[in-house]
Length: 126
Image (cartoon, rainbow, N blue to C red):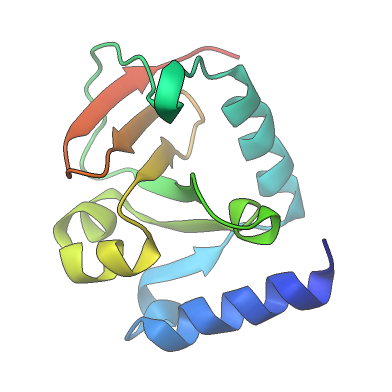
């Protein structure tokens, strides 16, 4: 994995989404390390499905969008933005991927969106 490949993917993402810079940003290195620790602590069942538990993630929180499928480089790109922006902008959400993981900025809750668009919310303590 090279920084050049990651930067190329970031450019494709920013070019493919109108007003990317006003809605989103990429996670920095420190945030990425925390996100990776969080993802490592999640319990995945077969086929990459997350076993959800009930939680109430505030619609006003900011979230990190994490790709679940793709190249190693793509899986290490995390996008930061508003909860409502990710969930109420299906056109751009589809640009990212059909199956996504959104992690709240406190790294305590998540929303898993499966290939069919179904939402599962959960919490975890790390």
